[in-house]
Image (cartoon, one colour):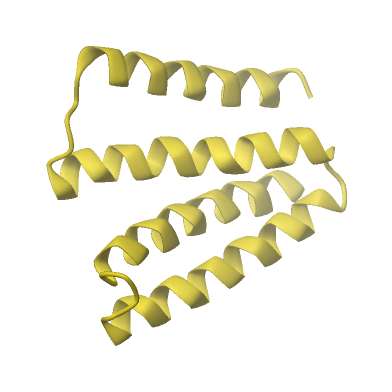
Length: 104
């Protein structure tokens, strides 16, 4: 169950980071509320996952999911550059996430 909590926490991290961008510096109420609610959910789920997972593994996977997910959404939604080097390093992060899960 802790892996499900951790995965969900990572997804909520992607949502809050993306909604924070849409909040325009917390000047738009709806994206700001979404940011605060989903950040709270993400932290709670991370805390639940950490009850049974190692701190370093859980935190690295949580941030890794957030990094890769928000970077991909930045490319798709905000037209951020999708250079070969950027995609390569995001793939390395994804490889690290998978490696940590497989070796836990």
